[in-house]
Length: 254
Image (cartoon, rainbow, N blue to C red; front, side):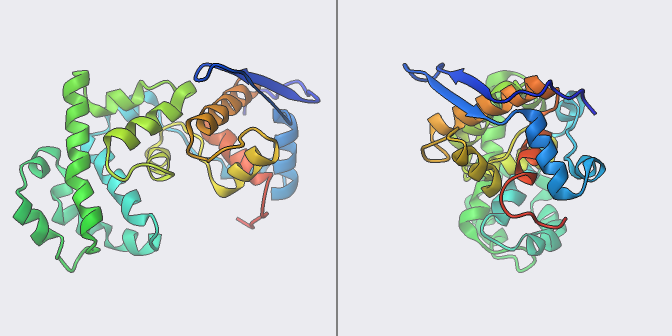
């Protein structure tokens, strides 16, 4: 476990890179947030056991482009749907779409895509099924433009600007905006915070964000907040996001 930060009565940081004015944010320090999470969840050992794991940069770099596309697709289908139904059918998705082989998917003609969309073994949502080929194109275009594998591109993105990666996926991919792209990245092991209901509630309660959750202003402010917590604690963004969520909102029994 990283060394704990020296207790502070209040933290304040300034962000101004994206706008022509300054935003000052004040909020509890890391130790206060961690202590609250431990109190609510039943102790330090419980909290530590519930924190997410982050993949190594080497693992993310070596992960095949097909696995990135597969997880993007899984999260797209889980969005607004029952997750366990998607999980139950996932091996059929893998089979129908050739284990998400990028080259084969890019060569697939429209009529074949339409036929696959009618396969009863999968969830027949054509608007979501179309994203498979569209996101395969995004991955291929990224690799061509960057002259490196998609996994290397992802692995070398600075975590201090992970919201920039969110924006990239939203802009260049299909249906990867909102929480879909970030949730896929987290599942893949990328170090990222998540703007869950509890995290958003905390950020609004402490006036860290005061605009739409997907606005550039809100994203930059949230990133600055988690960057500062990381500097205080030595923890990664994924752990900090979970710790914040444990200390705010409904105290669910996990």
